[in-house]
Image (cartoon, rainbow, N blue to C red; front, side, top):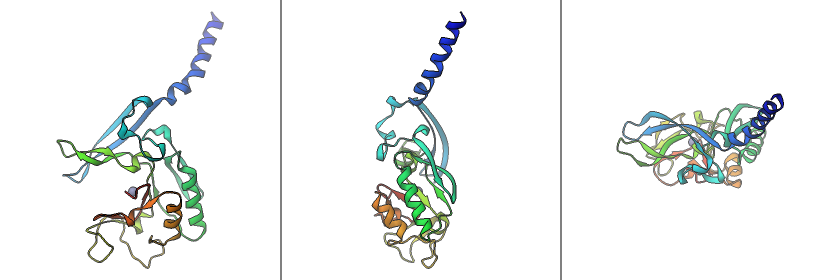
Length: 208
Ligand SMILES: [Zn+2]
């Protein structure tokens, strides 16, 4: 009897990580485009094999918590980011920081339905690049999100985070070493995207 019990116990221990690894779990905010705010939060728990096309992001990353790991930086508290890009992002951030661009604040993994078509309530229905841990915001206090900003000039309107002052040492520009290094690892800068918005803190595979 005792041996049987122990055997069962062992089986559970051996199999449990395998079972857990197949489960995808994430909690995402829901952005309402009409109200221009987060109106809801959804938690998704499903098998990895049941992930939809929209739950598969760039670099083989998913919104699943188990696909996210901590960025290990000596100058910043741990931040979750997709495990497939973590080491190259880490390298770039450490290099930029050591070469004189202080990295004060980072936001990376942050699941949210803030893209794509609207449902009948005006809610967005697709996951942003931050949802996959494949977008990273750097020093938002000095690199805000601007609208009415096809090209950078005085008519651009600050929508979120800090004002962009060109002379400030934390302001990111086209030729900033950090922007150049990010580009080298396949991360485009939100300050160079087409359209009316410029997201100066933001980096992702597409810039969006
Ligand atoms: Zn961002």
